[in-house]
Image (cartoon, rainbow, N blue to C red; front, side, top):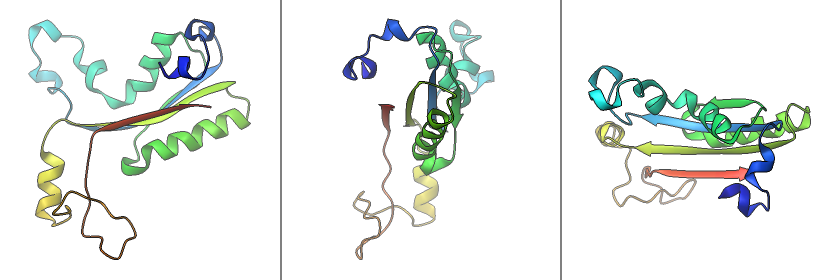
Length: 146
């Protein structure tokens, strides 16, 4: 849908030098590979490993530009955008999809930050504000066409 919103026919990108730059932060999404059910056997690695996200998107759309997955924690989507801009400037791709996604499927990060007293009591994040009192987390995804 992102590509259509940019006024581009997705089929026209098949075989093009379009790059995919995914800022991804994996937090216990899905079972560990050795804990999977028989019906999902063989899909654990590519279904839950954040590193393969960019390649899966590129493969599904038939894109032949760079496919880069980046995990720099909280800055992953910004770093992926930066890398996409560099690739466009250097002629490594003619179009780029850049963004990020986070799925917080288990309570681990919340528990750990709570133990550190790093969570905002009201769930609001006030970066750089005088009344900042911790962080607030959320699942999310955002992608842009460059």
